[in-house]
Image (cartoon, rainbow, N blue to C red):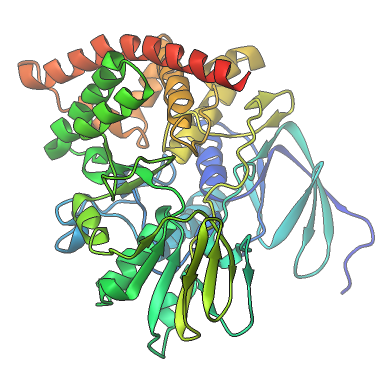
Length: 474
């Protein structure tokens, strides 16, 4: 039967565009903490957003114990055994994350009878969406709010269009296609120094590719985070919260920006692959120290800026040209994870635009925003608790990013109701660590005392540095 010529009219309390990680985390709070009716619209066949098209060997770069939705555990509680993440909390595979979101939708959301889910539909704005399969159009009226959970658009290698030209005859592929190789090439060129570039290099090394056969094009060196310091289980208390204390103290004691980064590296908060190159990029990617050691075996690192074109015989970069061959595989890892970094008010009348309100934690941020939506009365109150933490790109962005995070943390600490909710929320990993402090545990209490003492001093120093950045831009 052909689709109706007029839209099918639907009504729900909330209309959510996007069932990716952010949309699912937001919807989960509405499902568990209210009796709201919800319409969820997404372009993919299953929930999970970019996990539907992520490269097949992708893994979470954070422990699974504080990823996903608040009401459902993703982690099995196991630790990695062997390999480059030996002893650290499991990092769920992409297929495991996709299956998790599918289970949440099918077994938690839909059985309530309050959630209508429209996969394989494109949301065109103003409550309108259309089916990819039938062409049927719909109009959904939100009696309370529309939630744009697609604002932080994620770019993945499989759907990314390079910003350079690739001539005919070049063996060129997205990271997704590495496992499909059947004919051994002359070598590999990995284009990009972000998380996907790191993953590509590690995948090649793990498959016994000689480091000498890998050329790594690094347009900017990056500050990276030591994954050991992101663990949220009791054995890692002093690694995670101890490093947090040292980070605050390093910022507070810094004399200028350069000194701050030197201190942050010295205390173990930051690390980098090449210690002789000053980083210009910070995206918040995590690595283990064993992964750093593995990456350092790749010595053919090209630092000539961005690629502008590739032919079968040469790669043109902003700063020069290097040779290649027709039988060399060129791996595109140049996509930035988050495409849209524009900042909007989270709460703006009838529209909610979830964004990051805590560093590195989009799902926790979405859960907090949903809780604030349900429990506070005005946009002014809500936005005061949900200041946007801008997504970082350059090293200077670390200042803006960290300052915004500290301001939110202070606002939450002053609100007893929100503070208690965060402490009980599964996605707040730090609360699990704090819960391990016994009454007589002086050593752990000393760590938290250091954080409390240094945090306001760090914030004051970041305000100084931010003022200097603002003056430079003026």
